[in-house]
Length: 173
Image (cartoon, rainbow, N blue to C red; front, side):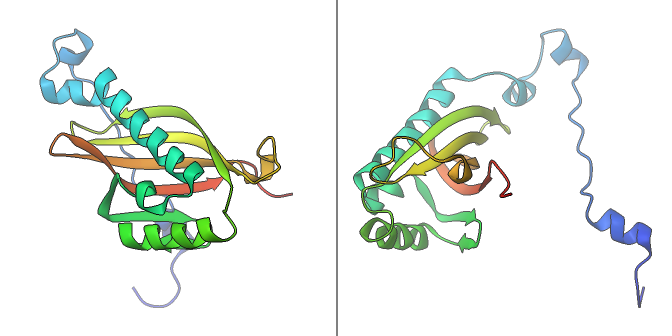
């Protein structure tokens, strides 16, 4: 099709495909297969491991340690934040080292894990509310609170951060 798209085509290109997760009769009756359970069951051991990764991540932030900050990142990890797209573990490490040596020096991070959702045996999405507290602040101002999405991958039995994205929790007025 050449020229201008119809209004219907323009509208549809911004609406992603709908994804329905159906529940089988065996799931509903409690007789789910291992594959079916991977999408629906809670997994306390894995949740604890993921929480530990995020806790260590923020301890490294508080210490201003860029090397420790990326310890649990995959080599090809991506980070997207307003105005920033980092495409590798090394790029994230370099950027954080620069930040910890300058505008982030002495800052601390707060993080409240909201949820962990498993996407099969080896993938998870965690959502948290987070923010940066600068020296002299007792709390993070509302305009600096963000919602963060963490995508984790389990490789050889170990959870790693594959992607991170954040967005302001409050839109600027």
